Image (cartoon, rainbow, N blue to C red; front, top):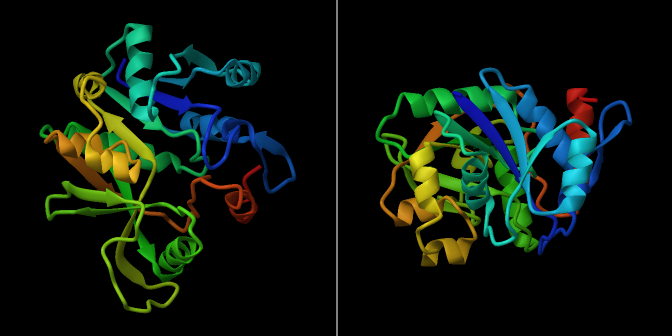
Amino acid sequence: MSVLVVIPARYPSVRYPGKPLVELRGATGVSRSLIRRSWDAAQAAEGVDRVVIATDDTRIQEHAEAFGAEVVMTSDTCRNGTERCAEAIQRMNITPEIVVNLQGDAPLTPAWFVADLVAGLRAAPDASLATPVLRCDGAALSGFLEDRRAGRVGGTTAVFDRNNHGLYFSKEVVPYTTTDYPADDPTPVFHHVGLYAYRPDALVAYGTWPVGPLETLEGLEQLRFLENGHTVLCVEVEGRGRAFWELNNPEDVPRIEAMLAQMGQE
């Protein structure tokens, strides 16, 4: 197997309990659950050999199997999606070339993000994993700042060096800027997209490392790789006019439904 996509999903959530089963209406008024829409996004990606949902909750398992998804049951001790992906491939007893973690709260993930990410990791033998970053325009940056002022986590930002090696990821808006950017103008802020491609050996090793202080403070799983000296490749992707947002809070539901309507997505 070359590329395996794992969609980690858990029922409990501090900000939004039961989030994977939340219904989202599309452009035609059809409602599909968040986990179903994330699964649809994974199925649409080219070059993917297999898609599985990894969960520890029978409610998610039964719902996912009802719409035809393959489900791998994992333990309830997984602290984040990366640990759940690692456990999933161990339970499946397989070693694919690349494991893609498409997070279950990212139903708007474009198919080309997955393809670009896999290509980026294949071209960077020094990297343990790759993750996409999307340059914010003025409108997106304004949305990030508005969320932070309201005390909401609107997304994650990334900073990286000239080799596209990740330097830091934060739920704060970094780098700091006081410039007021027009809505359509590019900014120096990059939105970190909730998608990862790992080499299997690094993924399995991840679960053996202790949680570090930065991961604890930010609640961002990818920081464990940086804290243990591993290279995280940031792959810049193009939005191609496609709206993108993750479902982090109940307030995000109408925002995502509006984006589905705008894209004409069922």
